[in-house]
Length: 154
Image (cartoon, rainbow, N blue to C red; front, side):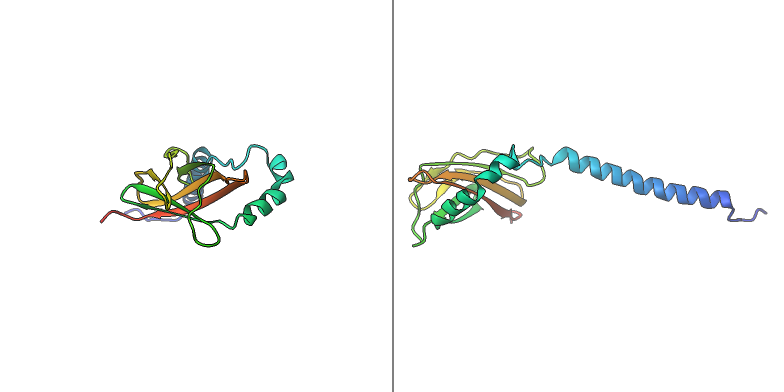
């Protein structure tokens, strides 16, 4: 009959195995984080910072209230003025995608229906970001990121 004796060698292998698992998981998670997140908000943050305050002031002067929703595979972007009336913009662009990767990014083609800007958007459930850029009739640029939550279909 052999006894199960806890020796120094066994303790070493148990400890080394535990650290190997921890390090392996950390390396895997770090690799996944770096390889899937684009991490780029602006190409040159210094250049963007030079006009940030003036751009922000001009954008706030528009007094727009912007919201978005997805229903029946249609993205509806509401841009309202300070009186709650729909705003017609000179141009509108946007990127619809996940915040963690760019694989599912879409570029919706918006059309104004009199109350909102609509575009087809078939989205999987979960969190989505709409990064929109609009130009007002007076030439003021407007940029905003809108977080959308798409629920599971019933």
